[in-house]
Length: 321
Image (cartoon, rainbow, N blue to C red; front, side, top):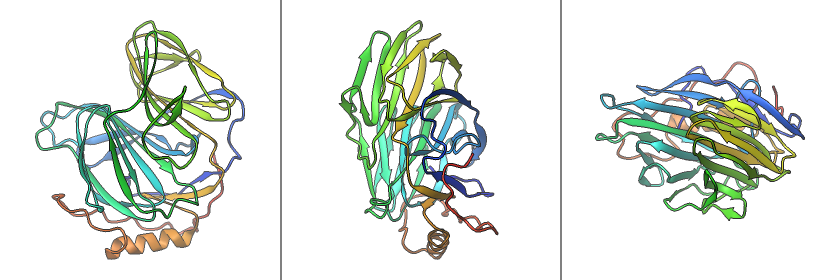
């Protein structure tokens, strides 16, 4: 998924300067952003109060949207570099196309994982004949310097491991959780899991104290370490936790995001993650000139033009708040 904001501004991310090295309860409110023709998303990362959680650097939550009489998601071809995109659905379908030739329908409970590496372009759209509701999340994972120029690739995993407890089922999307490991390729120590809790469930989820964590609410109401978290909001939890208390007030859906704090300083502009102004300038030139990022074939529409670069220099400054 793309950042379609035409007034795109650089985000400075990374570094350990603003990692909270102890448990906290920091509730993040979303920014509402129009995506394509008929989809509005709630953007939780980057946020004015929090730029990253581990290597997770971008989180959009959308729906549930009634698209029975709408085209649904339509995100034209656009470029990425220096990151992975994670597509995760609770309802509906999204058709992924990319410049490596991938063509894949992604459905609820299936992992769509695209590693941009040095350069890729892709599009996302609801199929012409689609389900009534669309509900999901789109997330980005920053690639470390040692792997950010890797070859682009797309993975589709329909079978993912689960962790269960009375009233809880956790589907592991990326990384590791309580002894389970996702088949998705990762480049930093990370966790991404979809949590389903039944009404009145009261559980403690094991965590890694070296990771920082956040919980995104997808549906229902859950008390996360005593804090009510409602759909479309995210609770940042800091580091130093060995377990996380969860109590469901209704049948609920959550996403647990975590990882080792990302040490490198980054520049995130539009749909690119880089380390310098020069890299961003070159990426914009390459995309507008039709080189390097390849071609997405089969999408009925023109590619997205890149926004203008800001008049001020782009500098990585770590975890600015």
